[in-house]
Length: 341
Image (cartoon, helix red, strand yellow):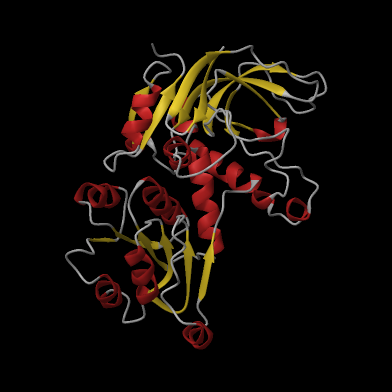
């Protein structure tokens, strides 16, 4: 089988490898599509360090190729599936308390994680989420990012009819928007890029704001009777986004810092303001198995439309070009197509 191996930052090689053999308790999946996520982009550029060599890729879909004899579920060969490529031990404190996204053993010597940029992968049945035959596997590959957005919105306890501000209308901002609409929220979206705002409008945003042209906190308060939004998700890594989030959120409001920062910026709000206004600032990391199941169901129900988020497809032969294209600000997701030539 083919596999794309990251041997060092900026160096990805296509290797011929043996198809993994599976244990009696595992399943083998023939992968069809895998998105080039921001994580893979950071690994490629060296912005995020990891042990090498490693096979990147974690937003993947495919079909069951083989099932171990001890697998008790009704998973059968040929079944279309989305894959949760994070190992969860099920035994540590965080797994046992429903926070398996923080599993203490999710990265260890045996389970380094990732592995989606290969034609076949052996996984635990708990990592397999069936999708209906009528859902294109290109779309099923988006279950992972949708699951992360579900987790994010749970962290701010978003409730029906609340006002939500999404700062940053890249791919994760667009998915937050669609997911929040499924939860009954009214959603404002802020971004300086016109095309991103247009997509947000097409997907049902109540109002889109260009923060370089309008005062974002003032616009928000004008449309919320002076209160500010009930919750805010920050998907933009710009420091100005943190400040705008703090100034656009109401008393008792909640902010989730969804994006990551390499420069560890300070929070633009003092502890006494948090105390007096009963505001909450939190973060979110990854997703749990329940989040992943809910993502698969939302996509299966047709509630989340990811088709406009597919910028283009790439192949093993053009994967490095695909990664470089994914690094551009004018793309959403580029997918590795395993069967394209």
